[in-house]
Amino acid sequence: MIDLHAHILPGVDDGVKTEDESVEFARAAAADGIRTLVATPHCKDGFFENDRGSVLAAVARLRARLAGEGVPLEVVPGAEVHLAPDLPARVRDGRAPTLGDNGRTLLLELSLSQYPVDLENLVFRLRLAGILTVFAHPERIRYFQEDVRRYEAVVKLGAFGQITAGSVLGGFGREVKEFGDDLLRRRLVHVVASDSHDLRGRRPAIREAVRAIAAMMGEGAAAAMVESAPRALLEGREPEAPDLAPEAPARRRWLAGLFRRSGEV
Image (tube, rainbow, N blue to C red; front, side, top):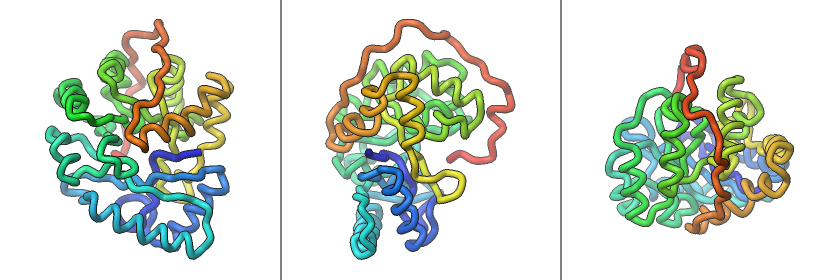
């Protein structure tokens, strides 16, 4: 399996803190059946200044350590890049690292609670620049939760979606799980990943979520979300996306408690 979104690089964001922890993190991922894990540190101005060069160097150091420890896990570079109006230029000049360092696939992070400005136009401009946009955990984004048509619009523009294993299993609450299930049924998400940050509450594990998706969608669809779809995105290719399901609620309003979160990660 491929885990497209994980915070394994030590000391660069709110994920793993030390290299020793990164090794144990990698062992846990391998034990779950993950064979390729994409290191996706946050990349956000003023908070986490992880550009292409620094990510490549950190991945090289970690790969050498894992090889020496005999951990059977391939770690490849990437980033979870926060929304910015000049993202096409940032991808070109290396300020916004891409998945697999392919220069083409961008894992895009939105604020969990703040509304983005002119999002459809940005996705369209990224598309024109030849960049594949993958939305990180859309099931947790308030802007999409309040009106699923907003998310459907960017998918129709050619974007893809990564749902988080913890959301599938109810780890972020009932409302997030229900919205995530709706996105799955409507074929609006294409990859499931761990978005793991540590070995406690947010572990590098996706197998259980894959089983849950298989029960809902079928084994073939579930397998594609951790095999062929993430592989295509790492290689800078568009994964095969199933036709969208025809029916769904046009608008969803969740309980106010859903938005009382302390963090944006």
